[in-house]
Length: 167
Image 1 (cartoon, rainbow, N blue to C red):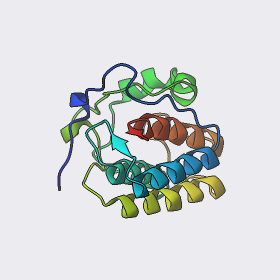
Image 2 (image 1 turned 90 degrees about the vertical axis):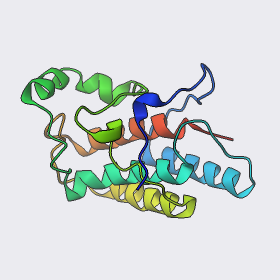
Image 3 (image 1 turned 90 degrees about the horizontal axis):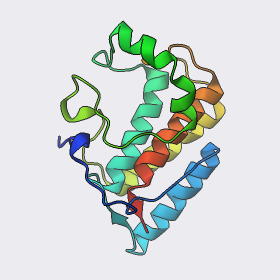
C-alpha cells in the first residue's frame, strides 16, 4: 500500500485551483466535471496523489465520522483545547496545504492507490450519505459537531484536495 507524505507536496503558485463549495451538491457537481475531464483525457493531477486516491481519501474521512476514527487519531488534550477556539476558522476558511497529522506516517491516512472509478464512486456514496444523515461520531479535534458543521468541514477538505485536479 503506497502512501504519500503530504508535507512534500509542492505546487507552483497559481497552479492549484481556487475552489469553494457551499453545499455537498457543489462538491458532487465538481466530481462530475472531473470525471468528464478524466474520460476525455483532459485531467491533470498536480499534487502527489492520483484522482482516485484524492476521492477515496475524501470519502474515507467522511466515513470516519460515521464508522469511527482510527485509534491512532487521538490528539493530545492541549491540541484539542487550542483548536476548539479555531473551529469557525477551520469550518469557514480554506484548509492550509501541506499540514501533517503528528505521529501519522505520511502525515495523513487513506492515501493508498485507488482506481479513479472506485475512488469517485466511494466519494459520491459518502457525500450523498453526508447530505442526508448527521454523522454519529464526535470529531477528534472539535468534539460534538452539528450536521451543518460536519458538512462544512468536509467541504473545506474537498476544496483542498480537489484543487489539485485540474482540467
